[in-house]
Image 1 (cartoon, rainbow over the protein chains, first blue to last red):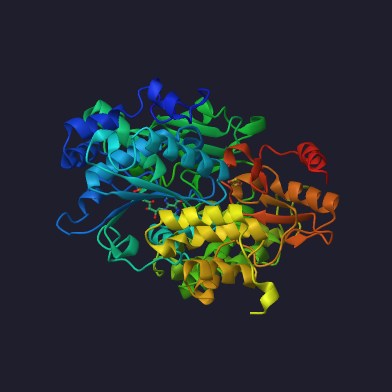
Image 2 (spheres, rainbow over the protein chains, first blue to last red; image 1 turned 135 degrees about the vertical axis):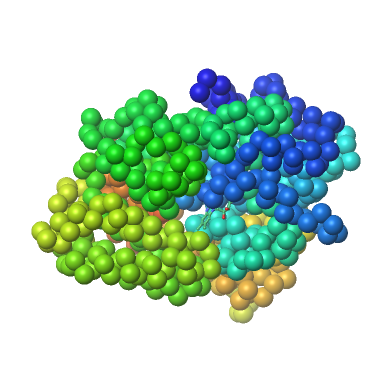
Length: 428
Length: 162
Ligand SMILES: Cc1cc2nc3c(=O)[nH]c(=O)nc-3n(C[C@H](O)[C@H](O)[C@H](O)COP(=O)(O)O)c2cc1C
Ligand code: FES
């Protein structure tokens, strides 16, 4: 893509400072929204732009905003999800550390649209630098009258809190995030009611991802038609792809939705490391089903990936070369989900431990063919049977690697161990 | 509670706590922020620290302890002066994080998940640090070290005086 939108300021010295952001046209969209548009017109523009949530589920942002009841008196809230915990994902961090004002401008415009006067940025606890830069950006913006009681001299006021998490993957799930913001354990809530009607402190609340909110200024500035002209039908706008694993040039790439996986990996990320072959990719983070090298021509957008049985998720592209053991990958990730399970739902709490034991058995040469089928059976006993979508996510590594690479599981069973055994790690 | 164990925030920390209390309209929302201050101030959230946070916020110690125990960044027992956390999640493990952990275990003479008896260093493995493009990655206290090799780890350890 010729023109960068989300990463346009990254790499410029002092990009995190207000004066840099303003010198590059920053906060003009906020000014435009406050001076020229009604709140409902901002929501309409976001709807028309086709923007879909970048946090994982791809839900249409304008539609989500329109679920907030208009006639309920009292406060309502916006929460920006900066928990970024999905393994493989490191895109929001680039914005938080390098362009915090773009996010703040997006938050301010969104709050104006939603009649919100208090917003929270829930940032994962480990992002110390990001939190520090965000806090400084908030202070700078308040000082300049871009946040605070009378934004740009208007009667719209906004308080933004930078709220640090404390090490918990599940707090990225929107209702767990709300619990955590209320000072509790991060236990997801049963839905419905949805946060749009009953959210933070029981009040109507919108939760959006960092990248989603960062798209808002350019939509307001350049118009929804412009935004919708980027990407493919139903999958509009720029997207940050966080490419990691066995590629020559891992990193965050901003490209239009709909770029092919092949182009992303071979033209941008430099191809597979050490001249090896591509084996498999998790195209949207560890919660998205693996796809194989044969599927490399898939378009990287919500609908195209769904059509091949996977998902765009957070846009975290985890690349595995032909020397990667898929059982080992599934084992590592299933352990991760077991560790992060909040423990409320029995299938997730107990089932994942069972799956880990079976996967360990297979990886270390004690497994049987029956264990492979049992894994699938347990997975289907977890998926769809928990109160938050983490149960579905947690079984995907095992389920999808068995679906695509069953022969590899079988050869572990047959040969009594891992055929990929390497010096760096295969000891129990 | 025995007299001698009563804790207090230092004046600087108290200032930070006051600022937090002032900024949050709903006091429950100040639980995590104040716990962060206490963790930094006391090095861990033992009973006395939890009780201090609870009384600061006017909440019951049980309520605060329940929350604190859910989050991995809050530690009930003191940690080493240097807390080394190596990511062993998917992207880091694809690029050899296991080798990094083993190197650290051998070099530091402490197993993962433990603090060395001299209290200088705690070594642990952690989940994805959100830095997968520069894997393998570790955090030492608040700071990230990326694109690790054993040579790089060695020079970081030397720099830390370990
Ligand atoms: C287990 C789990 C973890 C999640 N972690 C995150 C996260 O770290 N960041 C994020 O933006 N969304 C995360 N989500 C998705 C959120 O629940 C929510 O859908 C999203 O923040 C909505 O924002 P969007 O509409 O802008 O995408 C997670 C969901 C689940 C089930
Ligand atoms: S997998 Fe190690 S930082 Fe993400």
